[in-house]
Image (cartoon, rainbow, N blue to C red; front, side, top):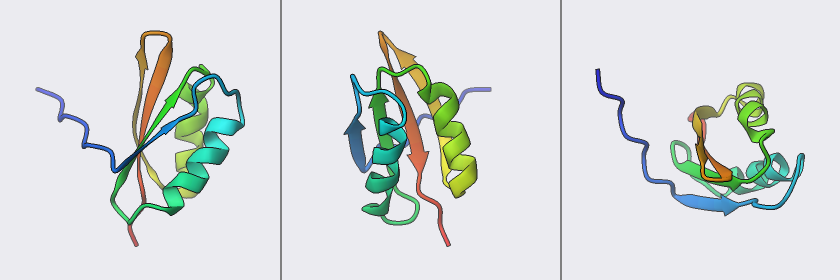
Length: 83
């Protein structure tokens, strides 16, 4: 069964070179600018994002679409909750 492609992000946040908690703090700020259902892509070099982003999404009820390693960094996709 083929995986569905990720939706195009409405906005991309580059948190490269910054450590926890910066990527999550900036994600919280950026997600406020999006409409419900829109997607944010967070680029980070902090490996902690692999656990931090899913946990933050569960706590805030946003949808974690996935965090993927790309070279030395990571891309994390979050869909803003609806309703």
